[in-house]
Length: 151
Length: 169
Image 1 (cartoon, helix red, strand yellow):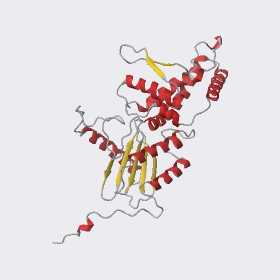
Image 2 (cartoon, rainbow over the protein chains, first blue to last red):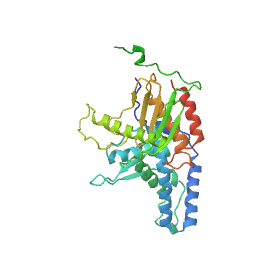
Image 3 (cartoon, chains in turn orange, red):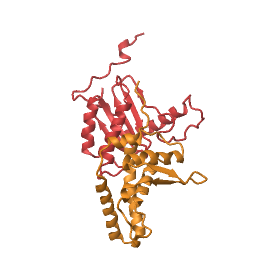
Image 4 (cartoon, rainbow over the protein chains, first blue to last red):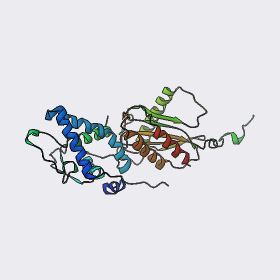
């Protein structure tokens, strides 16, 4: 009687949510990283802090992702990586990522973003060697996956 | 021998309350069993104190989900009873109905469970529960003051929820 709704594509969702100016987004993120570098000075500390911030975002973001995209539980890690790359990144950043570099076990892969809105116009100086500028994204993925993982 | 009148067996459902709410009460739990939210609009009978009531509700859902998934005749694999299922995996019940109320249930893969108890003539509430989940995302998950895993105390969520529940048929 009630129609079963399948998962929505990342494009469709991205078109339907409110969006923010890309430059504002890039500049805001750049300001955050700059401030962290000033406050914490150590590159490792900044990486850790960015990951923690991302984690706090991820644990909330997962519900929005599940509510808007209607995906069902993924069967294995491959499917999880595909969903993150094709639906998740598309929905929240408007960019499509690709999954590459699978290892033999299927437990390790790389998600590659062709054009990343966080790093537009950004050049890292030599003093920031080892800084993971986009570490907030790994934190987001970590937080989100933790909320759907088996207990 | 005296027989009770036939009309006593299934009493007609109570008419919607004067305030117009069509639902009796609503619960929300997270994956750890913490009762995030409880709201009642029309609940004349209360048998347990709130903590016991929440625990009973969560336990009931846990058992029902497990039972319905393991009893699935279409499922190819033979699981074993008692093994907890991941949220969103396998088949999951979505409502049960008695002669006086209907209980509708929805669980997200992140473990957020929404339970809505309404009058028995209510139709399929799966879309309504999804909408309530969206309200949760908008007013609770995105609220920076709210700490995930704690009881929900967001006025905007309460107001919008009341408004929406009034419109459910």
